[in-house]
Length: 131
Image (cartoon, rainbow, N blue to C red; front, side, top):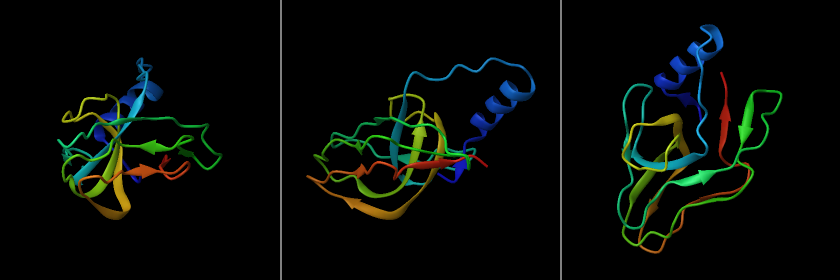
């Protein structure tokens, strides 16, 4: 994930430099988008057709400031067309449709998701590099 939301940047600055508390979420979730997020605006998240965000399990960050998923991430089987999925985000809630992303970025390749398709990320395929 190449970018972070402005709200997360502000939280990190407050926590690290202004001695403000930061409450980590219990879980973080992967979300899929058909139109990209930006640092300050919400993208268009997939809806319907059995879509739901899924929990991501991360390991320990590498020395280079990179962290990756340590379990396969598998979204529910699409029961309707989801459209062309272009982006992914890491969010702090399981509730779709809320602008709660921490990190976001484009997929390596867009994927047209139709009825019966399954979107998944292999172990190590979803990475975040802190810049």
